[in-house]
Length: 83
Image 1 (cartoon, one colour):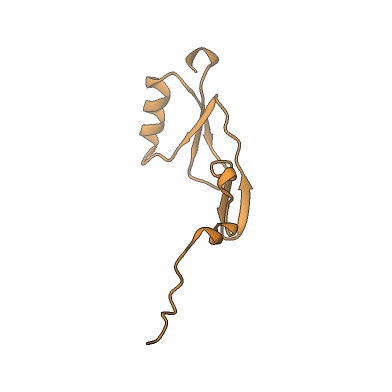
Image 2 (image 1 turned 45 degrees about the horizontal axis):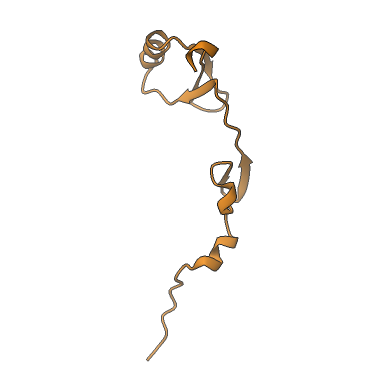
């Protein structure tokens, strides 16, 4: 009988990638790690078209800051009274 060459993940493989304590704080992609910071007054969207962005800004009273450089994400801030 021959042994299978397939690797079955186990708990020892968690040393690779983002540690459990950093999930939601660190984004790992392509071997690079980016630290994330959650803020209570901002959010981003990836709209299908520009009218979605305008409609959102008017319907929930947020301030549109425009497109984030090198992305297709639109950034908004929420007034303190709306948080």
